[in-house]
Image (cartoon, rainbow, N blue to C red):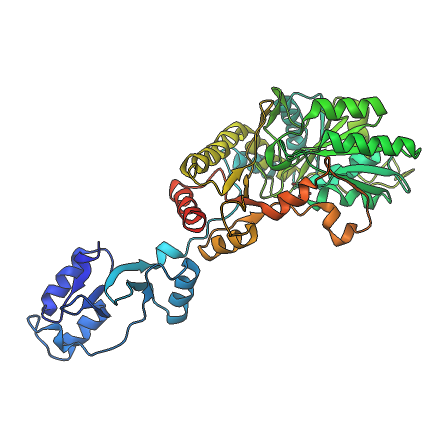
Length: 488
Ligand SMILES: *Cc1c(COP(=O)(O)O)cnc(C)c1O
């Protein structure tokens, strides 16, 4: 593989120039007769020989002896190689084996590409909608793109009404306000989630109580929810709402969860920030609660750079959400306010991006599912990995390819695994740290699944791999190779 860029001191300058000309590498490796690596030879080295008065037919024995830095085969990470190239301001580093023989040449292009977890992926139409907003000077919050985005998203998921807002977090906050959650109230909330689910409970002065995951879906455990509801009834303090999260693009097991909440008369907020495009028993995720919310943050399956949506079949709730999100201004000519509101509406520019993104949502779901399938197939022989399960009732959007490291088969912990992937310039992440383990929520009550804290175990052992719908095949192969190197 490096034969064509290898030269010896018995070769002439002309030989070397021909080699250089024929190869795309831009650099040659000078080796001794026994194959031991000696130094690199560049265009500049050859030019200097000519300027010193040597003929094209002169031998490379004229080259001065100099030590080139090298990397030892199998003993470096991509991050090491990149650091070396940056420190020495070079674009190539020869690879040698333990005996000192040249066995390869690493180029900057092989090591300077970070594979990221999940990056924005624009379609073709976003720009047109945004340009339309510029053309008509609809830059301010609200405008035709906002109205259209709300209608189009509601149609896409099959719900009656939607309100576009500035973030998923804002949508959750509004949902709590709509359900009249306030000081001293209790709100049940999935334990295994991003902190944005739980923070708005505290904004409202209410008390979060965290409910563990089910091992089969990683989402809220009906068993844990039932014991929490039973205890709440016994103590005479039922929650004002239950926030059910659909993690990593997969719906929670809605039937048993909703039937419990119905039985106790507690309304459900569905946090579908990560599960837009997924289904539960063929119905769109996000449409099961009294109120559902979506997020269009930069790393989500579709993005408006930042934004969210509150959805419901109840028109009065969505109307009230729009009202609260625009400073709760009463519909009278002067500025009249009877309640405290927020500045939470989405801008007409960003709604334009959202409309374009919605057109490619199905493509994005299939692309992410394909990324997962490729990982699953290529790594099927590694018992140390168990993927996030997808129950028969679920069609996940596989927002992030997520799994757990099985300690029965490897000594590598999930955190170590993630650290080693970072050394290969691959961005992996741990699974969300559950809320009951967060210092900010210390002292909050927590109900675990049967006798095990499933969310704590998933946090200990879980990882997320790069999953963007715009990942190239080469990037996916790099991830697969690196995972294999670490866990095989
Ligand atoms: C991203 C996310 C949110 C918050 O959405 P933002 O638009 O970033 O405010 C809420 N809940 C979950 C589960 C999320 O992943």
